[in-house]
Length: 235
Ligand SMILES: Nc1ncnc2c1ncn2[C@@H]1O[C@H](COP(=O)(O)OP(=O)(O)OP(=O)(O)O)[C@@H](O)[C@H]1O
Image 1 (cartoon, protein in one colour):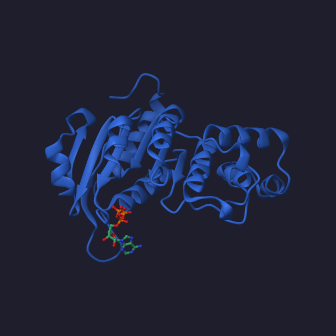
Image 2 (cartoon, protein in one colour):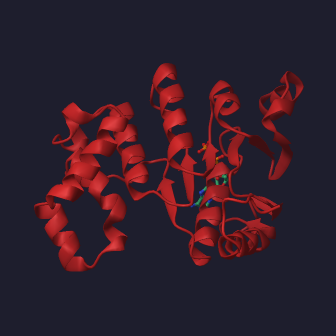
């Protein structure tokens, strides 16, 4: 059912996105990694993808990313490897979240000498992830957890209908993960995150999908995620 806060046009967009993944086989040329994927994600849902390493979470996220872009949705992506530019500062990496909103000349200027409002907006987003002191430091000199927070600040700076994150909280400590999960909740209406920490998934998600051996083992409201299902997923 379309949520009342969304216009019908946006809802049609979402419907198309879902149709695109109605029975899709996802893989890399040989045998599919995931077969017959049917995934209906309604605006406002927060979905956690759970599963052992190699179960297909990244493959599914990549397919969702392609589908969402093809339908004209604005998507903020946090890839597993962060996809930051190591030689550039944290601030400039955050500014890159909006590069495709502007033409080449504006972007060149932004990367050399950002306009004051752009700089202020990027600094505000770095502050939200607790990285104000690191704003002018090159990402290659940051810790893994700090780099992950830069990638998250870049996603928040971009904004959009949907955030897709591939283990976006894997390198931060549990307290930070909790705070950052709350930040993601506040910044994006809809989210699909691959998560390895079941406790974070429970706290963050409205819905959990468990992937195992090329299929969805379960797709449930988070309240129904019990110990037996976790054991079936990881055991
Ligand atoms: N570029 C690729 N080319 C070929 N096979 C791939 C490629 N990327 C992933 N795979 C294979 O697809 C399967 C699913 O991988 P995927 O990265 O989607 O799993 P995952 O659940 O995200 O794993 P992890 O938790 O370790 O990141 C694995 O068997 C993997 O070896």
